[in-house]
Length: 413
Ligand code: DP6
Image (cartoon, rainbow, N blue to C red; front, top):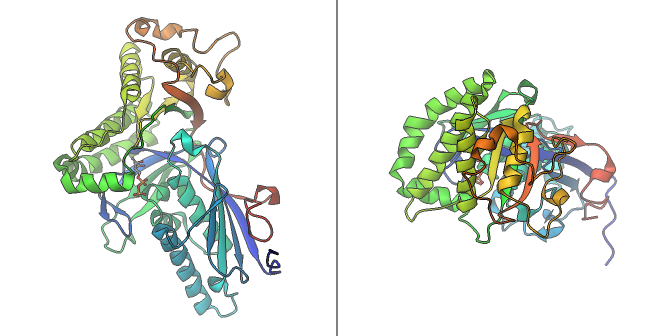
């Protein structure tokens, strides 16, 4: 079959958007359709240089239906209600602009082709819905020329996935739960830009896990319906914790930031256990990470690292740059690489934190000697891979045509 000739007026834009990892967790909805949360939340945007979604949108009068390709294979647009909601919201916004100014081209009536990819493997078990929907909505706003502020854009991203609203901005981002029934005040705002605390870095310990866990959407619905502890968290814990976390970030107070982050992760997993039937996301490897981080934080005069876990067993470790070399030595010693994976594939040291002469997995950090014999070394491969990243900026527009996920016809390359 010959592909339709490309329309001379077709428009195409490509963007990337970052992943974010919450330090005050979102878990619970008060409205599932509009994705309105039961509590406010706060996250750190991670660098797109390491992890990102990349999306190309092609807009043309010759595209007869909306189509989407995710990591190269086509997926049904009508079958994905959240995607349909995001597209409809952006089109309605464009239509209103066209009504108000009849000189504007009628882009709201054109078909949309979407190509989207993640630069991290789905098998890594990292949530891609946050970066994916943030990228979709950011790219839509570019291609349709919607004059939206970050917070306004975050409301559209929220319709795709709650956590996506926090990936619309860089640095430290809060999602204000809001009180309006229509969600007009349930949006993200930037607490501090990435330049405020560039020393804050993160390690993602990708934990080996065979079984498929409960999805966030289903899990949080069951929690809201059955957990009495969750109700307590929403009204009595999160409001004060949000204020304390914003202060810790403003002061670049790592000890305070770390303590709040670990306590909030613990509470999120406690309300999962309080859900009936209970939900377990952390496994034995996750728990070993908690014990290890707790031990080094006790041992040293200052807090070394903070752990946090989302709806799966992977650990995210936040720590200041200065602690990273010894933390990498510690984690690779207790969690050796899988036997069939090269050291480079296990950890590729993108920020060159392993000094000349130090062998990861063998050389124990001198500062932490006292905990060396108090823990057992895990089976090789309990941690599959370690990703090093840091706080980063918000979505970016890519100008180079090579960056595009779709070809000039708006089809996969
Ligand atoms: C544990 O944003 O994936 O990562 O809104 O249903 O799409 P939906 O859920 P999602 O939930 C994320 C939950 C979390 C905590 C967080 O990111 O705040």
